[in-house]
Image 1 (cartoon, rainbow, N blue to C red):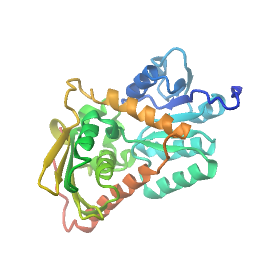
Image 2: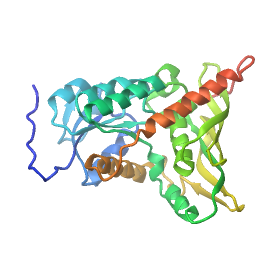
Image 3: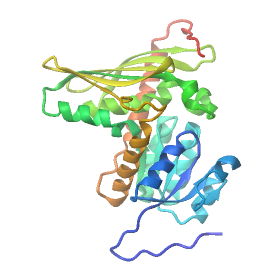
Image 4: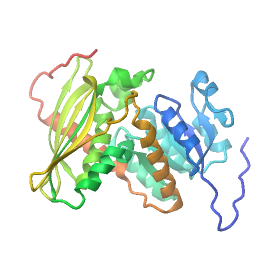
Length: 326
């Protein structure tokens, strides 16, 4: 049964009504942001797992099938927080239904699917927004402010290192290359590449070295990139590092070096994500309201992932190097 549409008063936009599709490990940060902020209202959730649904906020409608949610719930937008291989079909269904979409990175697992989603967004006039939560990290923002009036950036290093088994929790699909779209390059790469683009603008991959474990999962990578200005960037990814390190280091043309530690001040595991996802929600609703342009940044990051893997394939002359995993 289709839910009745709530009429809007002309000239008075209502608070966006949002459905959350997927209640995996990242969902708690979206739920907390939606509870804290008044810029959007959570009205429905969807997950295949009955236990996860039962733990959802009591006031929202619950669905097992995202297509039923799109048919039955009165929604303006959805947050897509499902495994990576489901981003494309779920986002495609939502865009075709005319719903705005905020999707966890990566936009899709293949560039051609990402391009199709962008076309669907334009065809149906529906916002397509990729959630790059590190953009909203307070230390990253402070670093950008500090260097804004200084010399141009000469080089940049982004480190994204962790033990993936700790971060995946119960979401074991992270370690399945078919579901994840790869390994550390496919999943952590988009956040790291987006940070490079945040500081340098458009960039291209110039070199990539990738190390895989015995199961073929890429667990370590070093990717070099270059901007039209000549500035160079290095992205270091590691899924096997004990503990966690997430940093951005900038070297300016005058020799000045500055750095942002994205985990600084957050003792709790994943503690920085609480404020970062508030930033995601605010930015998404700004796009919905027209206060901010909707750019297909998710597609740019996805193409950099594909370029990194292409360089790996081109530069791998013999048996792959294997790295241990916990």
